[in-house]
Image 1 (cartoon, rainbow, N blue to C red):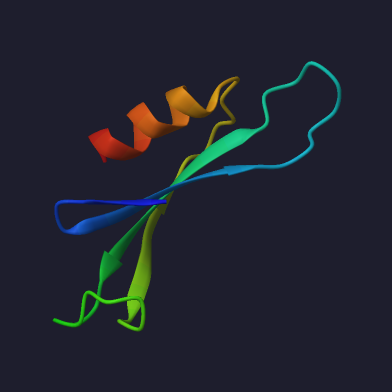
Image 2: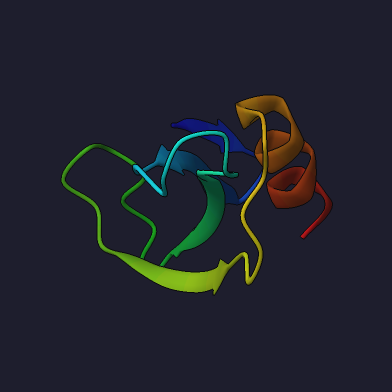
Length: 64
């Protein structure tokens, strides 16, 4: 997880079977002026495809 401008970007991983893409990207946005760990966030987008590497998911989420 990292903060990128006004967005919070996350890369996740789940088991999808041997040799299959298993990383995804998600983008959240701040819902208030409180940008601390207790601030409210809302889901903005989740990748509709799985990626082979977490780096590919990072590129997707930064471009959102």
